[in-house]
Image (cartoon, rainbow, N blue to C red):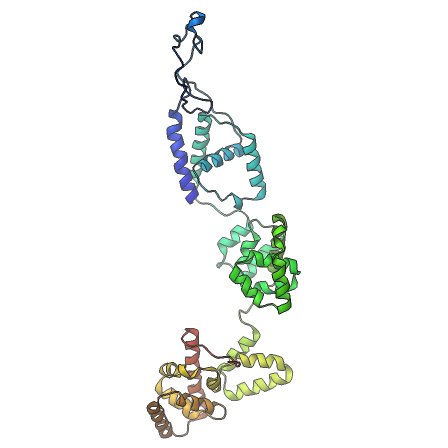
Length: 400
């Protein structure tokens, strides 16, 4: 509404001042005062006089003011007048957001108009202000504008279905929608399209997002697309627009995902809080049916046994502070097999005095029931996960 407010101020000024500027002696064809210099003595108005007394204008009647009836203009012509007036006040109008047909009509109207007298200008301005002030609420034009307003309030599947039913003939810039998508959503399109289309796609996105997408591609394809970007300067704007519409249509045709996380991440999250016997049995079964899937699941599993290999020793003090003392003692004392390695790792990365105190409490506790040990180790793992989510620690990968 900023341009409307600025435009309203400029137009009100014209309405207030415009009618006070009257055409007559000493004004030009545009209605503005002109300095004609010394014109010599003029005869009395209404008298012919003799030839020598006619001066430069003769003795014809010259009224002090000329009253004109406003010229009848079409709606499109009136719009052109308003745009021209606001442009003289340096008001920037977002005309590029209008449909192309409207922009073309506006340009044609401006080529057909030459001069507008003050009375007509004042009439157009008054009508414009009246319509502007009568607006109580405005809605975006077209389905795309409506979906942008409803974003976050209707489901992604409903939005995709509406776009699909509309046949993708939507208003607005398709590149704006594409730019708002996550790289993971755009990547399949980038992989499937030609090198040339991929170059246009990356050229239209923000540099940071383009760099991220480029890093997700195989080396050879990434290099070919990077080179093709250097050849995009000669592509016509309408071609770029058609490419954007085509990509947007393909993105809208993709079915909405029911789950946010990948299957391996969901299975890993479930097994993280399962008993070790259950977890080991499931992983063994996955190894037999789909070894590759099982390996991906293992990458998403973080258990007490993984502390020794995936938590930086310098972060152990944070882990210890985030777990209740009795739970930590039970976890350290009850860990067996591979998990026992993490017990030693935790104790080694404490101060000697604290580690000795922990060992004494572990001995005093004696044998821990398996169910209690599982619960305690899960509490420690949950504490590590919370620290990671808060950004206080970072889990190491297998290669670090």
